[in-house]
Each structure stands twice: as structure tokens, then as C-alpha cells.
Image (cartoon, helix red, strand yellow):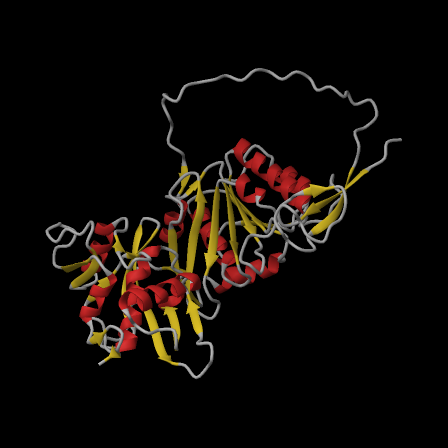
Length: 463
């Protein structure tokens, strides 16, 4: 009788090796190897596979059919998805515990059920009564959503593989389901890969829009091998602080729409409410005439978003001044402080610096450099930035201000919200453009020109 084969699989990246090791050579994770056993082929199984049929090769030119979409009616969710759920597609939704993943999914399921679609919600973590309590709390108790609790993939597919497959299928969560034919426990790399593959194969075969809810690790990444994100068509991350009312739904991968698109929600007692104008919401509590605050005209996907950047520069009593950053890259702040010190003569090394992006938004684009620099200089000079001004522009190591993409969309959003002037890079600035109508556009070529907006002398600090 053939012996079973034992191997060790990394739970972080899926790498396989014959012996256990404390550190994975592929991804660098520690204590991530788990023993898994594979059964050998049954006796009599032909060693040589049958010869497959040939594939039909076609050219790039052809008549393409538009993807049929299931529009949920939740505008911010449909925006993040690129216009709605695509029939036969697989969506992976991740986020921190308690952030609102199940609530948003239940709201989308209820909306599609109200539109006459067959919706099935399968949970491996909660009981039917728990789901009903959430539905009652959010006012969705009357929605015609079919519920079930189960973790066996074979049982799930046997239940759904009928003459009328569901239009929308929710699996909450993918880490809890498993294939009975495999020995590893649920949540392991082998089970995650095989269970997701079986569910995705069913969805594409029957034209069902599949949504998989995934757990996240302490680093904020979806738990399991990275191959799981490659298998699905769309990957969504639900971001935000549980103590804050705002939630951001970010598409980091989308085969049927633009990536990095976001949807903004506000958490209320009745559930998640879409926010149609996030810029006005992020700037709602902004106070005029306060030093250390500048408004950044940023882009999240194809959507312009205005957000306030707050900075505090104070004398330090520590040998090593403190640097605290929330919502921005700490390494980029250190680089920007060095440029202000070297190119503009502002002494920042002996001061504590605190930087915060108001509203809980996380900014990753370098276009925020100029707004951050304006907030820092404003705090150092203890003078507010020019009234009604917005900032955007990338700052180089030599102190030059570089042009950024989608300038017109940023200016349109600023003009729509009532701002009167824009501090922008000189390259790409066109004061006579239609996008800048109603805005006093001031182009800058070098970072030291920013000091002209404040009563500040280089090398001497505030007057």
C-alpha cells in the first residue's frame, strides 16, 4: 500500500517544503508552516494522463458583449465595484472585525432581493438567529433573502446546484468553509485554495455573482495565501476606525472596473449610509483661521476628495524629537522635513512634529506633499494658510514642485465646494482653463516660494 506524503505549507504565502522551518524563505514569515498530508493516487490510476483536446485560438478583434451587472442601488458600493456586481464574477471583501462587512453585505443582499433577484446568504460563523437580529436592527427583516448555516462546500454546492441557481451568493466567511475530501483543517492554505476554487467554478458555470467575506491579519491583509486574491475578480477592503463613523470601501483589484476606486459610508444605528459628497463631510468640522491646517485636493480612484491635513510643530524637551503621523506615510514626512530644513532653511530637527489627516482617511499619493508642507510651515509660523486655499503638488528632494495627474478634476471639486484659490505646481497650471474658473490659481516652481505666503524668514524661523 502506498504511503501518504507529508509536506509543510506556509500559511502566509502557500510555499511548500518537505521539512518544517521556523522562517519561510519565500515570504519571510515566522512560525507559519503547518503540516499537511496528501493521499497518494489510488492503485490502478494511470500514470500518464489522457491527451487533451486542442484549444481554439482567436484574434483580438471581435464583437464583445457587455458584462451583465447586478446593480444593488447602494451607490457607493456600486461605484467601488465599477457599476455593480458582474454575473459570474467572484468578489473578495476583507476588513477588520466589527468594521461592518456583514452589515454592508446584508444590505446589498436585501437590495438585490427587493429587485426580484434570488439571493442566498450562507454563514459559517453566525447562527440564523444572529443574522435575523442584525436584519431587524437595520430594518431589513422583511427582505426575501434565503439564509442557511453551513461550512461544507459539498453540502453548499449540492443545495444550490438546482434548476434555478441564485443570482447572488454570499459566503461569510471563506476561512470557515472546507472540502470534506481534504484532511487539513478549515482555514489552512490547502482548504482555502480548494474551497474558493470550487465555489468560483460554480459561480462562473451558473452565472452567479459570488461574494466571499475574508478575515484579515493583524497587518491588515486578507488572511490566507496571496493566490486567493489572484483567483477572484475583485478585491475590496473595508477601512476605517471602529470608533469613527466613516467607513471607506476601497477596490484594490477589479477586472471589470477601475482599481483604487472608493465608496464612502457613514455608520449609523440603522446600518451603513452612503455618503454622496465625502469632501463636504470631511471638511464639515473645519475651523477657519487656525494655524497648522491646510486643505488637500486629492484623488481616490476617479473621485476627487478634499480633506484637511493638520500639523503641529512644537519645541521638544526630548533628546530625540518625536514624530507622530496618522493617515500618511511617516517616511515621506521625514523626507519632507529634511527638504524644508535643507532647501528652505527652516530648522525642524529640534522640534516635535505631529501630523494628522482629518476624518480617518489614509492618503497614499505624493500629491499631498505641498499641502503637508503648507500645514507644517503654517504651524511653525503660527499663522493660518490663505483663506479659501487648497493645495496639491509633489515635492522633490531638490525642493522643486512637480506636476500631478488629474489637475482639472481637483480644481473642479475645489470650486464646487466654494474655495477661491489654489496653490498648485507651475508645470501643468493654466490660469485660463475652464476647470479653474472662479479660482485664483497661484503656481509655484520651488518650495521656498511657499514661505512667501507666511511671515517667515528662512534660517531664522518665525519673525
